[in-house]
Image 1 (tube, one colour):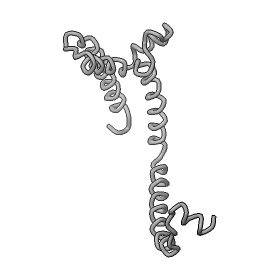
Image 2 (cartoon, rainbow, N blue to C red; image 1 turned 180 degrees about the horizontal axis):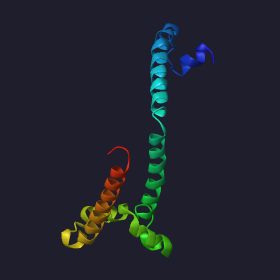
Image 3 (cartoon, one colour; image 1 turned 120 degrees about the vertical axis):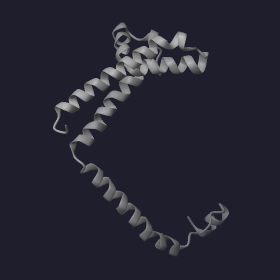
Image 4 (spheres, helix red, strand yellow; image 1 turned 180 degrees about the vertical axis):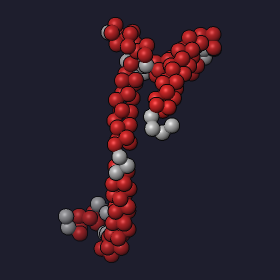
Length: 135
């Protein structure tokens, strides 16, 4: 591209010293990001395992909650499996409150199921924590 083409397109000409002056700043930011990235991955296996486990649980919970696909169109096996996903009850409660303006009389079964699952998971986590070396 010639200078006349740049002038016709009204593209300002870049100052070569501006590129040179921003180069050290760019390198410092890149280096600090790289150091932080390396440090994060050197934290050990528990963090990476937790990240992988989070991805393994988030996607199925979104699919089986009825957020993307209606629960009624799912095969019976997956429909039954969706009863064990807490996001299903949360989505039902949120849709009931926001879209329909439903009260507690309509939403209490979902709230009880969500409370029961949360309590059960908390008890399991507390028991596992007591059995580990951290106690």
